[in-house]
Length: 272
Image (tube, rainbow, N blue to C red; front, side, top):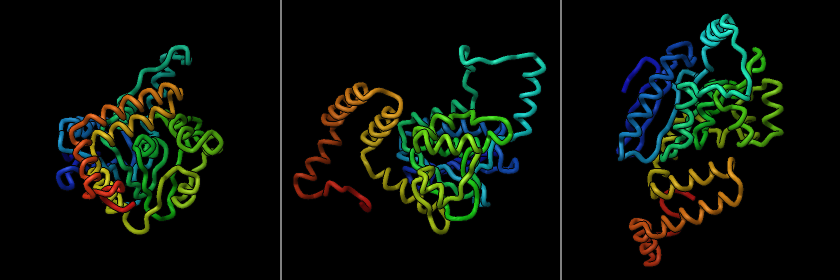
């Protein structure tokens, strides 16, 4: 798939690469939403895939943010209709929010390879991914929406607080702060800063993920996500249930047998 905003390619048999082409000045827009949804449809339909990497096109921008001109126009249209909003009547999820929810709850692990500016809706895309690598450099990462009278509207307040805790999230969001990659890593916004191009490192990480038992990876992802949104008892119940689900899985039994025969270390393939 090669659209105007999003390109989907294969890297080998088991890895998909989603590239945000950023032909709209590095910003998300309606076309980005449609094409990202189409890319996710294609990923859903490909049973051979084991991991997905999401990146920019290598021009210093991962995704700049959502196009503010589009947001302003939407705001003016809604205000002209006299609409008022209350949390008592939640607004339905937009197509972009649905895409981020699909990524977060997908059976496959998603790795964000941040290769440049990632603010607002762009960083919210990275937050929906399971792992985040950032290319070393002097560019902003974060959620600065309060500076233009808005707040993150694609899960940023919730996912950032769950990722780094309420203290760091509150300071970042209230002040509209963005951070250079090194500081973002110190605060926990990204997992690792990579010297040189980030995509090769992200692909190597995706291959490590692809080498693991896909069902085990999917279950682990689901349980870790549950830990942020469910009580301990519910999480423990799901954990022991999915543990037993894997215990009787034929591929899991084969891997355990190989370890017991001394053919496979528990550290598994790839570096520790």
